[in-house]
Length: 145
Ligand SMILES: [Zn+2]
Image 1 (tube, rainbow, N blue to C red):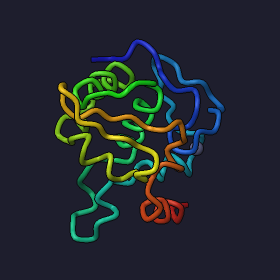
Image 2 (image 1 turned 60 degrees about the vertical axis):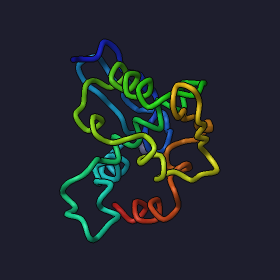
Image 3 (image 1 turned 135 degrees about the vertical axis):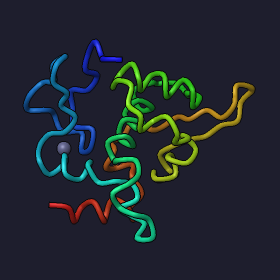
């Protein structure tokens, strides 16, 4: 499934305004090379016991954050995945990972999980991805140049 529009006008990592607006044909998720390289790190990059080439990329995590941040309302895992697909396209990286696992990469001060009759819902504060990320992960990413 392709996308009909590009949702972001700021960098998914640092929230800076994009120099080039994304177009239908060309995604632009970061403000420049450094943020792009940080985002291409796999989540497993942080775990030396796991092969670093596998695993969900930071891009996937940033899209989860961006979508929750812009939702303005708590979302279930299913609602979140469906919004991510309509915003960013049908990417395989989202199929297996549960929101409750990936949300733990963020500072608990910035997200809220609630158990409702529909299941768990997730809501986040309106802060940039690189503010919300737990400092132990952020510190590693800050060393990427
Ligand atoms: Zn950036």
